[in-house]
Image (cartoon, rainbow, N blue to C red; front, top):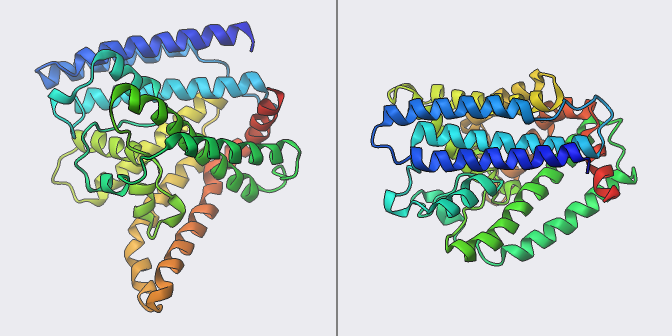
Length: 342
């Protein structure tokens, strides 16, 4: 690892921890307006210093170990930034009471170190009950996902998967790799932090391939705590009496802009196809009633399977919009080569 990347990593970690310490105190402010003003100042300062720290954009078609490390370093910066935005807009977790607020060290570990999502310490949403039987033995799940991830990356590194010629194949491989990577890291952090902090972590992924509708996929099965956080941020900033499609559209727009911004900082390019992917995701959710109506004519024993197949096929095909820019940069090939080098 180049020495300048080590310096940037240490600086990035220090910035995230400092921002977390400040936010831990800001969420206790009795005045919502004062919290938002000071939070906006903290966000601005965080962005300013991050721009001095973040690495140069990835070169197109020439992604190496340093660029892969830079990609994940940028990702950690955006994770911290989304946390700052969430706590500035919403204050302390709206699902929990102030008496449940963790101490400073626990707060930093849960919200600024664990790389997946804002989590509730006492969830009250019905989605929680989907996971109550999924919390056992996360370490074994993490090890299994690590093994599967190694197999897929090995296939990419040895060119058994020819990703250069097929955007669809690249997209499918990217979907699998990032599902295994993100959910596997989450399981590993759960295995460490649950017994250490005496909390139950809310899994972000719940067998997304079993989704029976597009809303089921985006709201409950794929990075669901991130989706919840985005919903809170958008709805806190809007008139609560707006028609439901408007806040929903803005949630997908907000999520799309976060992803596009992250990739812009990483590559130096704005990928309109990625934003189009989130627009298509919103439109697909609006089509859920049509999917339910069409499947109503199918025999009951086949209905669920057909709906799952339709959702999975549409998502896999549309994911090409998300991955198009990274395909041009040969990102997965660089990731596989980096893992092979180490």
